[in-house]
Length: 274
Ligand SMILES: NC(=O)C1=CN([C@@H]2O[C@H](COP(=O)(O)OP(=O)(O)OC[C@H]3O[C@@H](n4cnc5c(N)ncnc54)[C@H](O)[C@@H]3O)[C@@H](O)[C@H]2O)C=CC1
Ligand SMILES: O=C([O-])CC(=O)C(=O)O
Image (cartoon, rainbow, N blue to C red; front, top):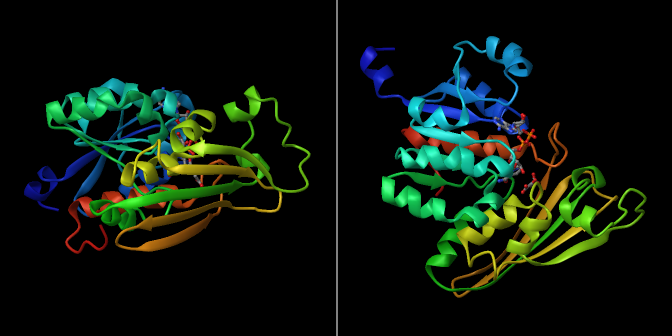
């Protein structure tokens, strides 16, 4: 690679090396056209040292608030509680922040204004969902309604605040139980590690208060299943996806792949899909 090529590379930093972050880091290390992995932020460096040593080019390990110094794109792959600590310093420096814990953005929406004021960007991958390209397109016209139903195996829902606060026993379920019905905004509060997809859908379409959502605990499924129905003046469409859980049972395997696909598009010569 020539020096000129190397210097025009987009530097990418990753915050959080869990189920999603490690896969994105490995993909960058193996090579994505025009991008390089420059830095990571981890909570416990000792725990991740072997993984980092195993990469072909070791990234710097930096505190969350310094990732934007070392990167053009900061990819948030941490719990939603850390979203502000990751995104704020990055967009203040005019960087792009790729956000997977998108549910956390609803209570921190001023970050969008902060990004705008500083030339930064907040980019939301399709993640574990499907069809946000069609929802984006329909939203240019008029969308009348967006309905989403999520079904997850019991392991994928354990510990969700809605379940804990309402003292719901899901461990002994034999048949599907509807846990929640309401807006995507309320769903994100009750299930912060489960329905980021509903918030992404809502931001692509008609917003978190008008996007309707059901969450089911379903002992009969082994995958995280999301079904979406959109009624618009340009089209009616329904779409569903059955995600194989990753080592984190709450997170579908496809989520990391969606982030990698999004990163590939940043400098790809041939770019397909919106
Ligand atoms: N947008 C979407 O479609 C989806 C989003 N998600 C969300 O993506 C996020 C990441 O998911 P996973 O990788 O499965 O979670 P994970 O729990 O496997 O990994 C999170 C990592 O962040 C690290 N971390 C926690 N605090 C940190 C800090 N202060 N500094 C640096 N690292 C820190 C943890 O140690 C862990 O390694 C979650 O918020 C999850 O809800 C998950 C699935 C789909
Ligand atoms: O992985 C999934 O199926 C969806 C998910 O956890 C989320 O949206 O937070």
